[in-house]
Length: 406
Image (cartoon, rainbow, N blue to C red; front, side):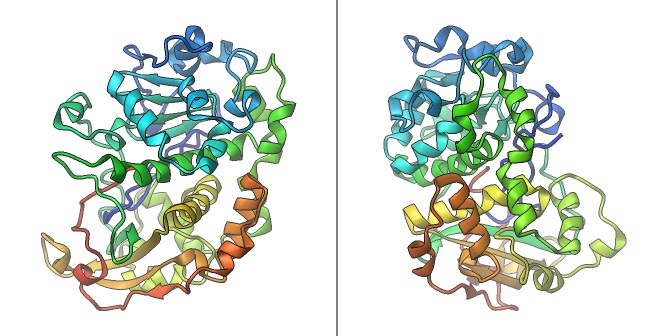
């Protein structure tokens, strides 16, 4: 079963992991667990969808009984959705989650609301970890750790660790990746009190990513052809041959066999071979550099490849953020800070790379109907991060700081 979503965007030994739902009908969520939505409710009580909303997004309540006619993708009703249209589809476990989501959505670019039109609903629940899109229901499930601002709000969220936390820990390199605003981090996840304006781009990154998955499984050109009597999962199965990520993989495939193997360790929890454990940061960087992936997470599945390209493009387009990605080697027995790591390979603004740009344009054309030629032509050239320098110079983020979960 394919799960995509979430990844560490700060420095982590594991990098990113699969999360969102694929086209399967299994009722098991990420990591073999399904969120408990027993305390969930429709945030907008007067929404016309409120009577059916919770049961249609809760796999324990057999959402297969919900048809497109009962809970259609947002864009079927509103081709240019407003914040109110989206909030009519929101399910939460705590009232502050819905209020905060509305505040964040009101500050987002209008283009994001259009992208979210492929969703049937948005679920924010204290039992969701990690965030993911699920083709079983057509909804996105958000970890509320993206949204809290105060200690009181944070206390309502469970402290269960992400199931992927130990993946790849025996490899001889670590992955670091983050968004940059100038030369500093684009957003922070630390407390004890967080700023609403900081949450806007952080949540945008999440929703552009998950929205890309939704558009991948239910392509924009196919929404008007959905039958009122079919379910989302049936529609997804019927449209499998139209999947946007499949078209990308056929037209512009990734080619690194080394990274295809590493992805099974880093993102799917597979055991590393002795050969993989012996790989250095320099070696994995050399294999990554000429290929067309914007981020190593792309090798976990064609769906993540597609979503990462879109996410990075939209964060640059709407917020001016560069994405930095690289690989480093630990230089001491027990690392305590970024000084204990040395960069083997790294870069920023990789979507401007000649091997990546045409693939990113393919994705924006598929979702937005626009290859954004002027935008890509105006991008500054990628900047290499010098090999051999301390990670403190390459990255302002300390090891394991996990500033954003996707």
